[in-house]
Amino acid sequence: MAASFRPTRRRLFAYSFVALLVWSSAPTFEWWCAGAAIVACGLALRVWATGYLHKNHRLTTQGPYAFIRHPLYAGTLICTAGLVVAASGSPGTADPVIAAMGAAGVAVYFLYYLPYKSRVEADRLVRRFGAAAEPYLRQVPNLLPVRAPYRGEPARWSVGRVLANNEQWNFLAVTAALAVIWLRGTLA
Image (cartoon, rainbow, N blue to C red; front, side):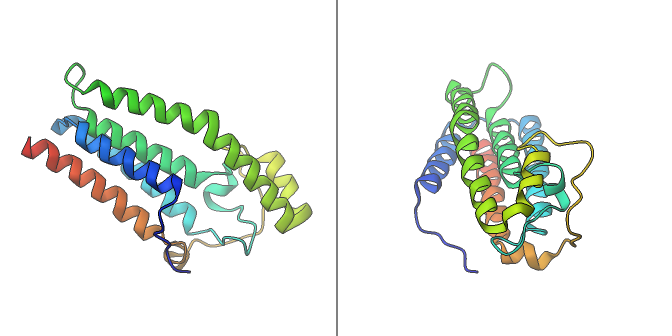
């Protein structure tokens, strides 16, 4: 499946968010490193998840999907938090725009985007996979992981799945944003 780069509202929002974040950034070495570590955790979660994901072909219930229904959204949220930390600089020196962007981003994500996407995706899973999806949807929460994993069909992680799901482009985009924030700090 080919990656689509057409400008959607979601992509335009994300690109604008990152551009404003980079423009407002005042990174220090320590805060950038902390942010980079957080970004690495988010990217690792996304790679772990996409290595199991068979979009629209199989109900994915293994790997991180056994613990949370939306590991890709969780990974994106973690990456975004890491970028905000990397860009923010030390307390008292950070641009207030970054703090406002972080707060606004979290509010939009939890109050609008996640509830909407959870509803849409749950409906899609039930339509596509029928009764097999219902126990999964009942037992596995959106973002806060369960202690005991859901026991679904066995599956193996595959780098081929990561590439088939075009995760390399997300990885490159987030890494590039982190690098530009670093450059902004070293060139300022």
